[in-house]
Length: 180
Image (cartoon, rainbow, N blue to C red; front, side, top):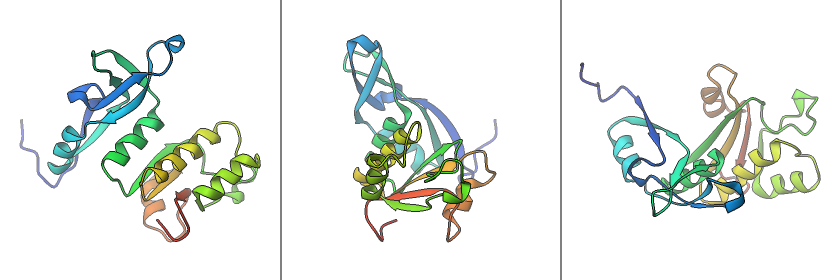
């Protein structure tokens, strides 16, 4: 086995059960083993990040008795990003971002605030499967994450295009004007 160069980033797969990473409670007995995040123990994450590893986390959490629960990935991402005081949270999906007209790719909203996003939901501009994505972004920025991005993961190098260009290629949501 060769030594890992400390400058090379290596992915490490984790379950939210590992080291008590995601603490959960059952959402509703009628839903079975579906849970909500109550806490994140970030010790294993900070250790891995400090040592140059990239944690890839499956969203299973456990309660105090060790019962495993399936956790919504968007909710888990928000809780983890909040705990780590992340600057950005990026959601990769199969849409270009928020479109004010789903049939018109040129209607992409590249940047908006949480308040404007709520208005879009209330006015019906955001509908269907985009609602949970936008609500997740709102939840992230309200939890203290600097910005949340919705990007089309089918585009090569989409994260670089979003973060390293002036205009970006997806939708960035911030808590307020001027923040990012």
